[in-house]
Image 1 (tube, rainbow, N blue to C red):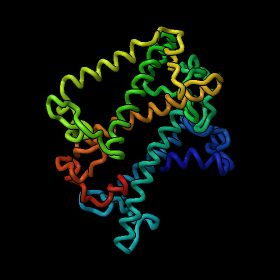
Image 2: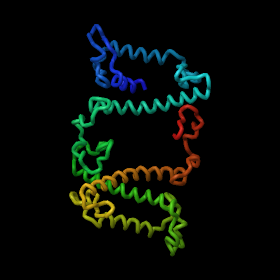
Image 3: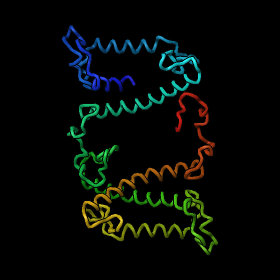
Image 4: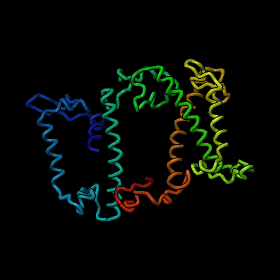
Length: 316
């Protein structure tokens, strides 16, 4: 939290007047904001920072069971004579600290690549993503986002292959997500899934439980349909299908701009569906339903600490 405020405050209020180091003729105004300051602050300045950190660490008894061990150092802002109010304040501090840890890492990252904690990403001239920043799937506000670094080699052939894979995974995930949701909303088909086995659609549980219930012939049909989708169109590099355009009316248009918009929306929806289906699998596997009550996950290793007061933040 201190580091985050250290980035923000000079940008909003300006820097202190006068000298940071009179002996070195170094003014506060000469110190850049952010990571650039590391090499500019003199050794004596770093010694003072370390000494202050040591004072904060050693000036109170923080052994197990003490108030300081639970975060209460007696600061007026973070304590209270009312036990309930104090607990609320200390819990808020933990939540704010977690947010600040994410914020400062983001500032370090952006500062290191652009020269400023809120620098324009266009300044990151060495970005290996520039080779693909005009490609389909560049979504505002992230732009071309590749946190795993798959495109850092700039290989357009690898990019095209991975983009095709992403499109297919997204489509499968959208179908799977709808497969979870639809029976819950509209109910299941009437009649038999397998008349020879006297297996009704109503007998098939929704979600992962269906895997062991659907007969082998059903899985053959599913695999055959996937193979048809895969092989029924030419998807070699440079074809419309390779870019996701299979000619479906919903996802194509005679207007190139409109078509681009629809295909970009499909990628965004596919990415969302990939996250959604993994979440459904996870929750289904642990609770028995894609939107099961987490109280049903009786084997949770977190139960040992679920009655703790400070770190348990609402909605988490």
